[in-house]
Image 1 (tube, rainbow, N blue to C red):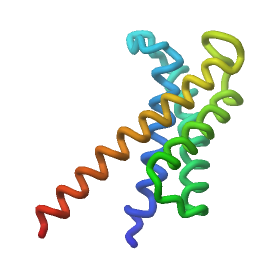
Image 2: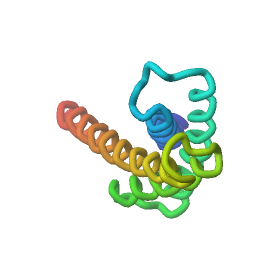
Image 3: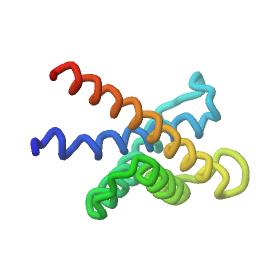
Length: 124
């Protein structure tokens, strides 16, 4: 297995966690994004994405739905501790971020799996 294939789950999970955090913090209004949002989302993405990828690797989970749920739970947990919520009570934003990360992970994973399958089919 190449280094690229070993690092791909980490990069994918970090990006999904960070993106979910970023969009949730500004409640979907990307025009409000500032440097502090990017820094906070980067912290959430690095911690949650790295922890989720490590947990998935160690448990050898292959089911896309279970992997996405695991990423969502870890992202919500990390988001709660990385920064104060921007809306709702203390945990509301963290929960929304976790759900967003899980949905994003499932959608991105499904699309990537289909693209890989098409590429494999085309290669013969």
